[in-house]
Length: 223
Image (cartoon, rainbow, N blue to C red; front, top):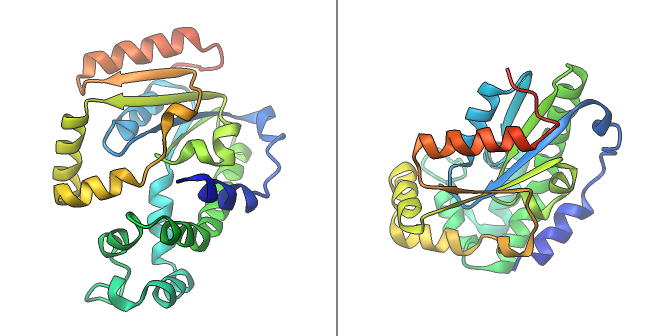
């Protein structure tokens, strides 16, 4: 389902990242929504020296707020995706694209250029600022160039029922919407990872994983 999206993302790749290797390490964290990516990124950022984390999905949220992108989205999907304030309602948009591959590809085509420009700019700025490591967290991270750029690749697995309950409560969505959104994700079994974290949502388990990660990764500097 993600092959065409992958092509779109890679087609728009333009940054030359060989120089990035000289200055900054990238840690890629991926996994389904609610699996614990943000929590792990936060904990690693707090424990590692001169490290910044980026939630790529939040850049996607900014993309749909961009005036030109909003206009294009309305032209394609209709004004039914707008809320009362005439802004993109992501849940309404999601109801349209999560169950339709072609429409999801169109959404990616419209938003990815903006997202990549922002993300490339952040990476370059962090490199110039002397940041030693940057953490990228995103459910779709494996299908783009930023996964190939990652020095350490982490996949988080979580109990499906616990994850579903967490996401439904966090995002205030129905089970039907959760299942629709979840089904539009990627197949992680197609990718190789340096570390797999089986998250049971207990801090002790995460602490043990982080300790193991740091001990086995020569390129991670702790505080």
